[in-house]
Length: 289
Image (cartoon, rainbow, N blue to C red):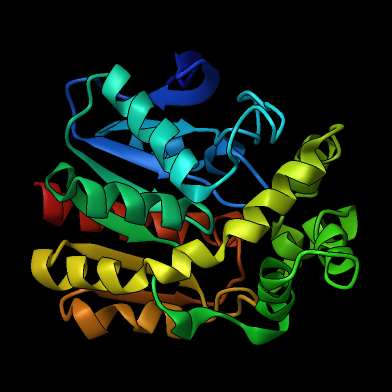
Protein backbone atom coordinates (compact mmCIF):
# COMPACT_ATOMS: atom_id res chain seq x y z
CA UNK A 1 0.00 0.00 0.00
CA UNK A 2 1.30 3.46 -0.90
CA UNK A 3 1.16 5.80 2.11
CA UNK A 4 -0.14 9.24 1.12
CA UNK A 5 2.10 12.20 1.88
CA UNK A 6 0.48 15.55 2.66
CA UNK A 7 2.12 18.82 1.63
CA UNK A 8 1.18 21.51 4.14
CA UNK A 9 2.11 24.99 5.33
CA UNK A 10 1.88 26.48 8.82
CA UNK A 11 2.45 30.07 9.86
CA UNK A 12 5.02 30.19 12.65
CA UNK A 13 6.17 33.52 14.09
CA UNK A 14 4.92 35.22 10.95
CA UNK A 15 6.77 32.89 8.56
CA UNK A 16 5.28 30.24 6.29
CA UNK A 17 6.83 26.88 7.11
CA UNK A 18 6.22 24.20 4.49
CA UNK A 19 6.27 20.60 5.68
CA UNK A 20 5.56 17.08 4.47
CA UNK A 21 3.49 14.87 6.73
CA UNK A 22 2.53 11.22 6.54
CA UNK A 23 1.47 8.35 8.74
CA UNK A 24 -0.94 7.88 11.65
CA UNK A 25 -1.17 10.97 13.82
CA UNK A 26 -1.39 8.87 16.98
CA UNK A 27 1.85 7.02 16.18
CA UNK A 28 5.33 7.96 17.50
CA UNK A 29 6.62 11.07 15.76
CA UNK A 30 9.75 11.03 13.61
CA UNK A 31 11.01 14.48 12.60
CA UNK A 32 13.22 14.64 9.49
CA UNK A 33 15.53 17.69 9.28
CA UNK A 34 17.29 18.34 6.00
CA UNK A 35 20.68 19.80 5.20
CA UNK A 36 22.24 22.30 2.81
CA UNK A 37 21.58 23.00 -0.06
CA UNK A 38 18.37 20.99 -0.24
CA UNK A 39 14.99 20.81 1.53
CA UNK A 40 12.50 18.18 2.69
CA UNK A 41 12.70 17.01 -0.92
CA UNK A 42 15.69 14.91 0.17
CA UNK A 43 13.32 12.73 2.23
CA UNK A 44 10.71 12.19 -0.51
CA UNK A 45 11.52 8.47 -0.79
CA UNK A 46 12.17 7.80 2.91
CA UNK A 47 8.91 9.30 4.22
CA UNK A 48 6.53 6.65 2.83
CA UNK A 49 8.92 3.89 3.92
CA UNK A 50 8.54 4.99 7.57
CA UNK A 51 4.98 6.28 7.57
CA UNK A 52 3.24 2.91 7.82
CA UNK A 53 4.38 2.81 11.45
CA UNK A 54 5.31 6.37 12.40
CA UNK A 55 3.92 9.89 12.18
CA UNK A 56 6.55 11.49 9.95
CA UNK A 57 7.15 15.23 9.61
CA UNK A 58 9.71 16.89 7.33
CA UNK A 59 9.78 20.70 7.27
CA UNK A 60 11.71 23.04 4.99
CA UNK A 61 13.92 25.42 6.96
CA UNK A 62 13.27 29.13 6.45
CA UNK A 63 15.15 30.26 3.33
CA UNK A 64 15.01 26.75 1.84
CA UNK A 65 12.55 24.81 -0.28
CA UNK A 66 8.95 25.97 -0.17
CA UNK A 67 9.16 27.84 3.15
CA UNK A 68 9.31 31.62 3.43
CA UNK A 69 12.48 33.36 2.28
CA UNK A 70 12.54 36.72 4.08
CA UNK A 71 15.59 38.91 3.54
CA UNK A 72 18.41 38.93 6.11
CA UNK A 73 17.14 42.34 7.16
CA UNK A 74 13.75 40.79 7.99
CA UNK A 75 14.91 37.54 9.61
CA UNK A 76 18.07 36.63 11.57
CA UNK A 77 19.59 33.76 9.60
CA UNK A 78 21.26 31.90 12.44
CA UNK A 79 21.00 28.30 13.53
CA UNK A 80 19.38 29.49 16.76
CA UNK A 81 16.63 31.15 14.70
CA UNK A 82 16.12 28.04 12.54
CA UNK A 83 15.80 25.94 15.69
CA UNK A 84 13.29 28.44 17.11
CA UNK A 85 11.08 28.09 14.02
CA UNK A 86 11.30 24.30 14.15
CA UNK A 87 10.33 24.28 17.83
CA UNK A 88 7.49 26.66 17.05
CA UNK A 89 6.16 24.37 14.34
CA UNK A 90 6.22 21.38 16.69
CA UNK A 91 4.45 23.36 19.39
CA UNK A 92 1.79 24.50 16.96
CA UNK A 93 1.22 20.90 15.86
CA UNK A 94 0.95 19.76 19.49
CA UNK A 95 4.02 17.50 19.33
CA UNK A 96 5.74 17.08 22.68
CA UNK A 97 7.78 13.89 22.13
CA UNK A 98 9.65 12.93 18.99
CA UNK A 99 12.63 11.21 17.43
CA UNK A 100 14.81 13.11 14.97
CA UNK A 101 16.60 12.11 11.77
CA UNK A 102 19.16 14.84 11.05
CA UNK A 103 21.47 15.40 8.09
CA UNK A 104 24.03 18.21 7.65
CA UNK A 105 22.33 21.52 8.71
CA UNK A 106 19.58 19.46 10.31
CA UNK A 107 22.09 18.30 12.93
CA UNK A 108 22.85 21.65 14.63
CA UNK A 109 19.13 22.38 14.66
CA UNK A 110 18.55 19.01 16.33
CA UNK A 111 21.31 19.64 18.87
CA UNK A 112 19.62 22.88 19.93
CA UNK A 113 16.25 21.17 20.32
CA UNK A 114 17.87 18.40 22.36
CA UNK A 115 19.87 20.58 24.73
CA UNK A 116 16.97 23.00 25.26
CA UNK A 117 14.28 20.37 25.86
CA UNK A 118 15.99 17.01 26.41
CA UNK A 119 12.86 15.35 27.74
CA UNK A 120 11.16 15.76 24.35
CA UNK A 121 13.74 13.72 22.41
CA UNK A 122 13.12 9.97 22.28
CA UNK A 123 15.92 9.02 19.87
CA UNK A 124 18.36 10.56 17.38
CA UNK A 125 19.46 9.37 13.95
CA UNK A 126 22.42 11.22 12.48
CA UNK A 127 23.17 10.79 8.79
CA UNK A 128 26.33 12.76 8.08
CA UNK A 129 25.44 15.31 10.74
CA UNK A 130 28.38 16.31 12.94
CA UNK A 131 28.46 16.68 16.72
CA UNK A 132 32.27 16.58 17.08
CA UNK A 133 35.11 18.39 15.37
CA UNK A 134 36.52 14.99 14.41
CA UNK A 135 34.25 14.83 11.38
CA UNK A 136 35.24 18.07 9.65
CA UNK A 137 37.08 17.43 6.37
CA UNK A 138 39.58 20.28 6.25
CA UNK A 139 39.60 20.70 2.47
CA UNK A 140 35.91 21.65 2.62
CA UNK A 141 35.66 23.46 5.95
CA UNK A 142 38.82 25.55 5.80
CA UNK A 143 37.11 28.08 3.52
CA UNK A 144 33.92 28.18 5.60
CA UNK A 145 35.73 28.94 8.85
CA UNK A 146 38.00 31.48 7.15
CA UNK A 147 34.94 33.30 5.82
CA UNK A 148 33.13 33.15 9.15
CA UNK A 149 36.18 34.60 10.92
CA UNK A 150 36.71 37.42 8.38
CA UNK A 151 33.89 37.94 5.87
CA UNK A 152 35.15 40.02 2.97
CA UNK A 153 36.54 40.07 -0.56
CA UNK A 154 39.35 37.64 0.27
CA UNK A 155 37.12 34.92 1.70
CA UNK A 156 33.69 35.45 0.13
CA UNK A 157 34.40 34.17 -3.42
CA UNK A 158 34.94 30.61 -2.17
CA UNK A 159 31.60 30.73 -0.36
CA UNK A 160 29.78 32.04 -3.42
CA UNK A 161 31.36 29.21 -5.42
CA UNK A 162 29.69 26.80 -2.96
CA UNK A 163 26.32 28.07 -4.21
CA UNK A 164 26.89 27.19 -7.87
CA UNK A 165 25.42 24.31 -9.85
CA UNK A 166 28.84 22.67 -10.02
CA UNK A 167 29.09 22.65 -6.23
CA UNK A 168 25.52 21.45 -5.69
CA UNK A 169 26.05 18.60 -8.12
CA UNK A 170 29.33 17.71 -6.39
CA UNK A 171 27.63 17.53 -3.00
CA UNK A 172 25.33 14.83 -4.31
CA UNK A 173 27.95 12.85 -6.20
CA UNK A 174 31.00 13.04 -3.93
CA UNK A 175 31.65 9.66 -2.38
CA UNK A 176 28.80 7.83 -4.11
CA UNK A 177 30.07 4.38 -5.03
CA UNK A 178 27.68 4.15 -8.00
CA UNK A 179 26.98 7.65 -9.25
CA UNK A 180 24.35 6.38 -11.67
CA UNK A 181 22.08 5.77 -8.66
CA UNK A 182 22.04 9.50 -7.81
CA UNK A 183 19.27 11.23 -9.73
CA UNK A 184 20.17 14.53 -11.45
CA UNK A 185 16.67 15.65 -10.47
CA UNK A 186 18.25 16.55 -7.12
CA UNK A 187 20.42 19.40 -8.33
CA UNK A 188 17.82 20.35 -10.94
CA UNK A 189 15.45 20.85 -7.99
CA UNK A 190 17.85 22.51 -5.53
CA UNK A 191 19.75 24.89 -7.77
CA UNK A 192 16.85 27.10 -8.91
CA UNK A 193 15.96 27.61 -5.25
CA UNK A 194 19.54 28.60 -4.44
CA UNK A 195 19.52 30.93 -7.45
CA UNK A 196 16.50 32.94 -6.29
CA UNK A 197 17.32 36.66 -5.96
CA UNK A 198 18.56 37.30 -2.44
CA UNK A 199 19.15 33.67 -1.51
CA UNK A 200 22.93 33.89 -1.79
CA UNK A 201 22.96 36.51 0.96
CA UNK A 202 20.87 34.18 3.14
CA UNK A 203 23.30 31.31 2.68
CA UNK A 204 26.28 33.58 3.39
CA UNK A 205 24.70 34.55 6.73
CA UNK A 206 24.38 30.89 7.67
CA UNK A 207 27.99 30.22 6.65
CA UNK A 208 29.02 33.08 8.94
CA UNK A 209 27.04 31.58 11.81
CA UNK A 210 28.38 28.03 11.43
CA UNK A 211 31.03 28.39 14.19
CA UNK A 212 28.17 28.85 16.68
CA UNK A 213 27.45 25.16 16.17
CA UNK A 214 30.99 24.17 17.12
CA UNK A 215 30.86 26.36 20.23
CA UNK A 216 27.82 24.36 21.30
CA UNK A 217 29.59 20.98 21.07
CA UNK A 218 30.79 20.83 24.73
CA UNK A 219 27.23 21.37 26.04
CA UNK A 220 25.89 18.92 23.48
CA UNK A 221 28.39 16.24 24.44
CA UNK A 222 27.47 16.75 28.10
CA UNK A 223 23.84 16.18 27.07
CA UNK A 224 24.88 12.91 25.43
CA UNK A 225 26.72 11.79 28.55
CA UNK A 226 23.92 12.64 30.98
CA UNK A 227 20.97 11.52 28.86
CA UNK A 228 22.44 8.48 27.09
CA UNK A 229 19.87 9.20 24.40
CA UNK A 230 19.52 6.30 21.95
CA UNK A 231 21.50 7.24 18.84
CA UNK A 232 21.98 5.69 15.43
CA UNK A 233 24.61 7.02 13.04
CA UNK A 234 24.14 5.94 9.43
CA UNK A 235 26.95 7.65 7.58
CA UNK A 236 28.21 7.93 4.05
CA UNK A 237 31.80 6.96 4.86
CA UNK A 238 33.18 8.53 1.66
CA UNK A 239 31.72 11.97 2.43
CA UNK A 240 34.24 14.74 1.68
CA UNK A 241 32.36 17.18 3.93
CA UNK A 242 31.74 15.20 7.14
CA UNK A 243 34.14 12.29 7.32
CA UNK A 244 33.54 8.96 9.09
CA UNK A 245 35.40 10.03 12.23
CA UNK A 246 32.36 12.20 12.94
CA UNK A 247 30.25 9.06 13.21
CA UNK A 248 32.79 7.12 15.29
CA UNK A 249 33.07 10.02 17.75
CA UNK A 250 29.53 9.48 19.06
CA UNK A 251 30.74 6.43 21.00
CA UNK A 252 33.00 8.68 23.05
CA UNK A 253 29.96 9.88 25.00
CA UNK A 254 27.34 7.33 23.94
CA UNK A 255 28.98 3.89 24.27
CA UNK A 256 25.82 2.13 23.07
CA UNK A 257 25.45 4.23 19.92
CA UNK A 258 24.79 2.18 16.80
CA UNK A 259 27.18 3.19 14.04
CA UNK A 260 27.04 2.04 10.42
CA UNK A 261 29.52 3.34 7.85
CA UNK A 262 28.21 2.95 4.32
CA UNK A 263 29.95 2.96 0.94
CA UNK A 264 28.29 6.26 0.06
CA UNK A 265 28.76 10.02 0.18
CA UNK A 266 27.20 13.11 1.75
CA UNK A 267 23.67 12.41 0.49
CA UNK A 268 23.75 8.71 1.27
CA UNK A 269 19.96 8.33 0.98
CA UNK A 270 20.26 8.80 -2.78
CA UNK A 271 22.28 5.63 -3.31
CA UNK A 272 21.66 3.58 -0.15
CA UNK A 273 17.97 4.17 0.58
CA UNK A 274 17.07 0.53 1.26
CA UNK A 275 20.04 -0.03 3.57
CA UNK A 276 19.43 3.14 5.57
CA UNK A 277 15.69 2.46 5.81
CA UNK A 278 16.42 -0.99 7.22
CA UNK A 279 18.77 0.40 9.86
CA UNK A 280 16.34 3.18 10.79
CA UNK A 281 13.30 0.91 11.08
CA UNK A 282 15.23 -1.60 13.14
CA UNK A 283 16.62 1.08 15.45
CA UNK A 284 13.27 2.81 15.96
CA UNK A 285 11.55 -0.53 16.48
CA UNK A 286 13.97 -1.48 19.23
CA UNK A 287 14.01 2.00 20.77
CA UNK A 288 10.38 3.05 20.58
CA UNK A 289 8.82 -0.41 20.73
